[in-house]
Length: 343
Image (cartoon, rainbow, N blue to C red; front, top):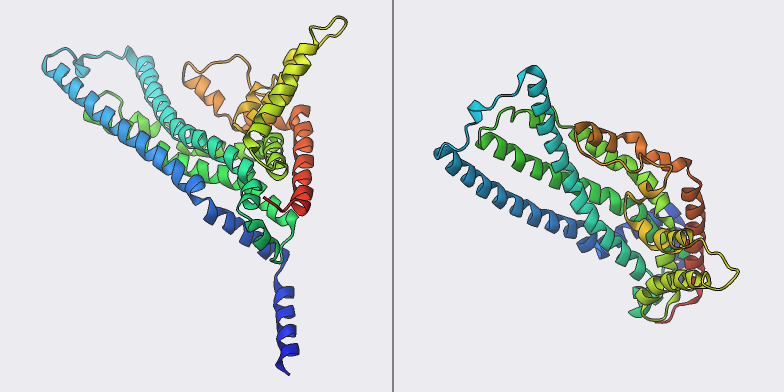
């Protein structure tokens, strides 16, 4: 007698599960399962670098104090060549503070690149390998929701987490540099707080994430497609196929009557196919940023962290064609997951 009522209650419960709630649950699931890579890996790397920096700071301070006792260094005797020299010294100290902040973000992003690469590559292969895909397919969630939740982590959420952790690492390195400057009595040491730009650095890091999400689509899409398709060794398929394809096409250029644009072939197949997962590679596009420029002083650094420089990538055909191809490959991964459920 109670069975129909229970079935109706179950039906009502199932109907109450809105697709957005399911998607949020899937995002949480990805974080729970990959918390070590997304969260702890950059923290551990940052802690190691901060500890080594602190040891280097202590060692440097000891050596400087010994030099001062031997009267080899006299900070009070340093002449800053008037107002212009003082401003130049303050800018240089602030420049060092910005470098410390950028180093922290760079460390977290370096870890993120490896995490995102292997996460995308194993995102759909691992669940087939351990047969957990059968359990997840028994739940009321679509293949589209599952694949898109994994793509969202690789393209959006993981870089946001890495940027936040990177900023914390940068602040720790920034404080180490400040303590070192004050402890050694270096002139204009206070400029590290007044001339640095922590908010601009953080805002720039966050502003590049929409660019990254579109720019990295071909790499993430290719890795997820290989993850959904390969029955074994997805790494070899993902890496060797574009490299061998580029090699064969380049070799065809040796045949008489055939002209191959080697640079374009390797750029499309290997660089955009595999290396686009590295943040900042959009600067290799000739229409983004100032090509050939190097960071030699505070003005160069200010231009490098200009908020609009990364957004120039939105005006390139390269980004949109790559995004369309990447989206098509993610669609292919969704279709493959639907039909390929054995390990």
